[in-house]
Length: 119
Image (cartoon, rainbow, N blue to C red):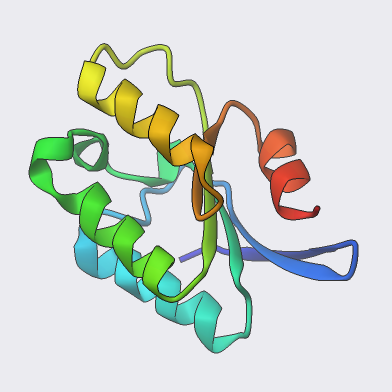
């Protein structure tokens, strides 16, 4: 798992921005959370390309389980990527509702993700 740690405004952010899929299932999401939490990092940025497409099919339950764990441990997560390719109304609604809160956000670019978490 290739995770970079960057420091912005005296805050450490874990950044996963690779073409490798690092979250293939619920266990991988839990491992990512455990790794960053163990290092004392409470903000994570991940490229959507690092996540299995099944995550974004809400019927699989992967997104719900993984994101609930991040929320439970109060680790903020921002997933960035192009969301226009998804035609699912339920996923669009999920993204919209998530973006109203502060635990999990979905944005278009890594720069937006960094801006959100470095405030």
